[in-house]
Length: 75
Image 1 (spheres, one colour):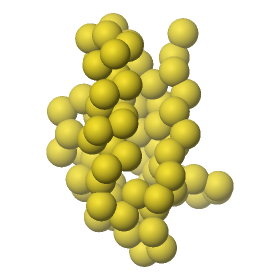
Image 2 (tube, rainbow, N blue to C red):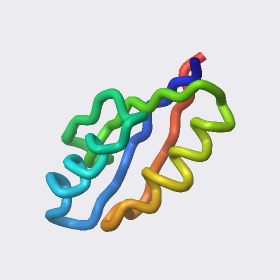
Image 3 (cartoon, rainbow, N blue to C red):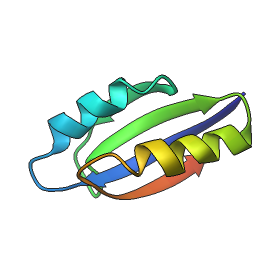
């Protein structure tokens, strides 16, 4: 099982909207609004590293109002 924490910056005022959209994605196991440099932290799991990459690239990063992400892969 591949797992990563994705740190997400969103457009101003869009925190709750993006958080709700993330929670609807099946591979997002947890997601939280946070204070600091990033707005949201999401825990993403997938069967393989390739599938994890696809989910982050094609689903998380393409959500409306997501400005940037930083993915940290769990060892």
